[in-house]
Length: 254
Image (cartoon, rainbow, N blue to C red; front, side, top):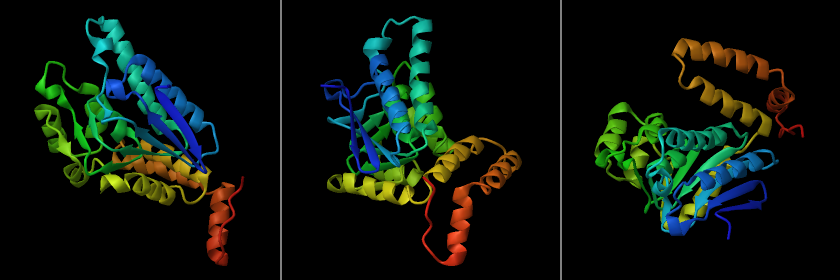
């Protein structure tokens, strides 16, 4: 059976990591397969993408079978392959929600929190365990530190401790925490709310959000003004404003 399962259900594509025997560890081949699945889903008319996983762990991070004894060049290449998956998730036009049912650790935590939104089961946990060992979680901490404050990011990085789902919610690492039995429904409910409106406008909004997040406030305003002014001229923006003024439901261009 394939390590990556892709299923379309209405307007939603679900990409499921299906390598339970390896705790969904991110080997090079697995990373490439996931990246291709997101590229393919991104080219469709789906409105949203769910990233899920089979097995007792959401993802255990990098597959050490790839990394042990790897040369400097090979290690860099593998990390670049992983980063390309992260960039792809944030580049596809659809809203991407991680449906985290269990432990997401190291690059598996990086993968979960890179998604636009995260819904976690009460049984989930999040960790950057490199701080407990000999290989610090440098790249996972990029995604983690972009989602939570510096002190909390440092705590995760330095202790390597597992952060339970409720704490992850309080820290801003996830959007929702629900009982395990409600995880799939809660994920779909959030995705349905997040995909309302014009798909093309949403895609532009997602792209612009990521582009401005790391800029200074003044630079972010300069960028956002130009994007918002330009997008005001799109058919979607004009239809949205007209529908509001005319008190009717908008009809988005195909």
